[in-house]
Amino acid sequence: MPRTKRGNSRLKSRKKILQRAKGFYGKRRNCYKIAKQSVMKAMKNAYIDRRRKKRDFRKLWITRIGAASKQNGTSYSKFIGGLNKSGIELNRKMLADIAVRDSDVFEELVELSQENLQN
Image (cartoon, rainbow, N blue to C red; front, side, top):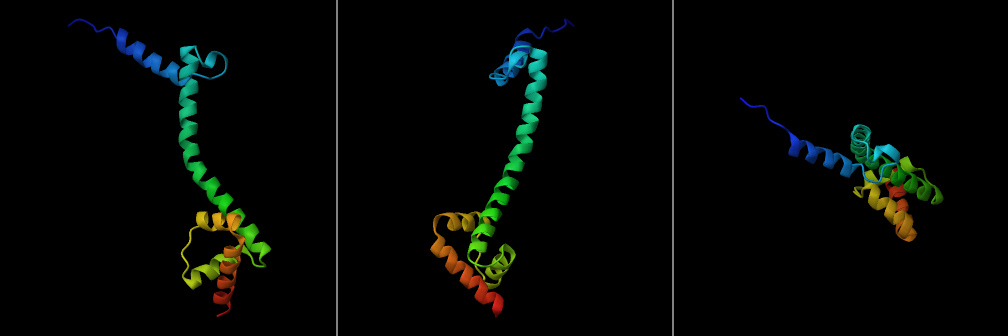
């Protein structure tokens, strides 16, 4: 059985790696061996950061809600606890958006949560 030469498919895979390494610094962009390692690491970091992004945004929303609730005289945990008791089901993304864009509505939400904490 004759042996196969991988000319076309090898060139295709090299081209794909070097295409992904476009814009990298120095030899990382055009030296195949180094570019391959860099692309592998970049893809690993991209995978990790797609998950980290979700964590980071949730932290940001919680920080914004906490700051806005402090301005209205309550803590973040009491505010969220009061909202849960009152049955208001707004997620943190929406609450943070309301806190940034519409402070009057956020004040009403704080009052509602405080009323339900006292009851």
